[in-house]
Every structure is written in structure tokens, then in C-alpha cells.
Amino acid sequence: MDQYLQQIQTFANENLMPYAWNIVAAIVIFIIGKWIVAKIAHGVNRMMDKRIDATVAKFVGNIVHIILFAFVIIAALDQLGVETTSLVAILGAAGLAVGLALKDSLGNFAAGVMLILFKPFRVGHYVEAGGAAGTIKEIKIFATIMNTPDNKIITIPNGAIMGGNIINYSEMPTRRVDMVFGVAYDADLSQVKKILEEILAADERVLKDPAPVIAVAELADSSVNLLCRPWVNSADYWGVFWGTTETVKRRFDEAGIGIPFPQMDVHLDKSE
Image 1 (spheres, one colour):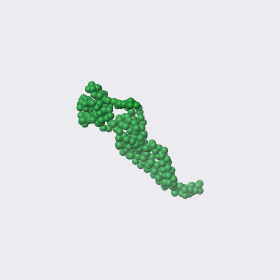
Image 2 (cartoon, one colour):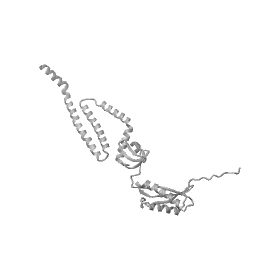
Image 3 (cartoon, one colour):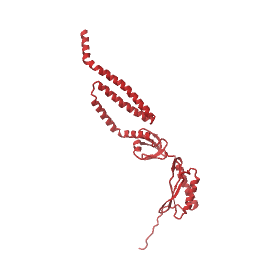
Image 4 (tube, one colour):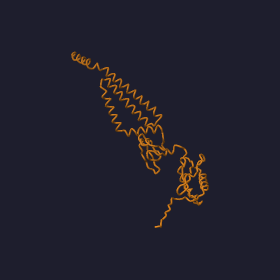
């Protein structure tokens, strides 16, 4: 019996004891490292949650946790004497492959983070972006949901939005309504301007400051074109545009002011 115990002790001294401290150190590195990583990821999550969208903050926190935890595992394996150089190379190659495979998705994610950080528009704004126009319904991590005026839902990748121009029609409280009205060359311009001024003055939606602009813009082929540019609250834009256009037609008809349309005179040569 003593001989067997002596053999076990000899085996332990020769094979286990040299690695015992390494095993203990690896376990300590893993436990402490795991605790530190959890604290860091939680702190990053809380810090970002105060500044950006909660979904983005949670996603970034998870990414930080995974990356740091991978370093902890590598450090623990290295303490055990495991060759980690090849493991790091394999993880790097795998990360590169995943990054290339998800290139478009990662681009849309980065664009989504930028949209949330810089806020070129918010939910409820009417914008023109990504080749479409409509009211922003929801801003997600990878795509933005837009509701068109004819009640269609459009899902646009965030990369397409950030890669082009963004026109926000709702950001500013007021907008200028640009209208052009053509009248005949024999029309009295003073009378035409007076009618336009009366129409704008009678509309309570038209702002007094800035004052509306009414001016001759162009002597076109068939008409004299006048600019009519009142300022309105953004919510009243289309109401004023459509209402003013209809009222101008009615008032011009009552005053006998002609609104010309393109015409062509054809002359026949009968000399032959």
C-alpha cells in the first residue's frame, strides 16, 4: 500500500505539481477577468444608454462584452501553456470572414448609429431620403420605416439614407410656398399683383413676417410669369398651396385676366 501511495506521490510531483500553479492562476484569471468584463460592459451600457437609443447601447455593450471576454479566455489558456498565437490568428480570420459576409449589414448598422447620434430627422418628420419621401414611422438599427402620403410603408436601409441627401421638411417651423402664375401679355400687372396681395392678406395661414414676395419672374413664350411666395407654418404648406392656386384661378376669371396656354401658329406657304 505504501508503495502505491509513493508512486502516486511521485507521479503528482513529477507531472501535476509543476502545472498546479498554472492551473490555479488560469482559474483566477478567468474568474476575475469575467467579473471585470461584466462590470466594464455594464458601465459602457449605462454610459451610452444616457446619450443614444437603448437598443444601440445594449447592442454595443454586448459587442464589448464578447470582445473582452475573448481576451480573458485567451489569457487563461496562455497561462496553462496553450499556444494561443494560432488561436488568435484563427479568431482574426473568422472575424474578417464574418465582417466581409456582413459588410452591408454592418454598414447599415453604422449608418443607423449615426442617424440616432446626429438626428437629421425624428419620428413624425416628413423627409425625402433614400430615394423615397414620407413621414418617418420608426428608426431601427438597420433600416428606417417610412409612411408615404398614400399610406404605403417603405423600409429603407440606413446605409442608403446616409449615403445620399436628406431633405427634412418638418425640422423648421415655417416654410416658404413657391408658386408661379402666368398671365397674358395684355394683362394689367398692377391689377394682377393687387389680386395676389388681396388673396394672401385674406388667408390667416399666411404669415406677416417674413412678408410675402410677389414679383415678375419671367417673360415666357406665351405668358408673363409672376412669383408668389408666402411664408406659412410647415403644417399649413399644402393647404395654402392648393387653396391659393384655386382662389387665384377664380379671381383671375372674375377679373377677366387670361391665363394663357402654349399655342403654335402654323403658316402655310401657298406660293407653289
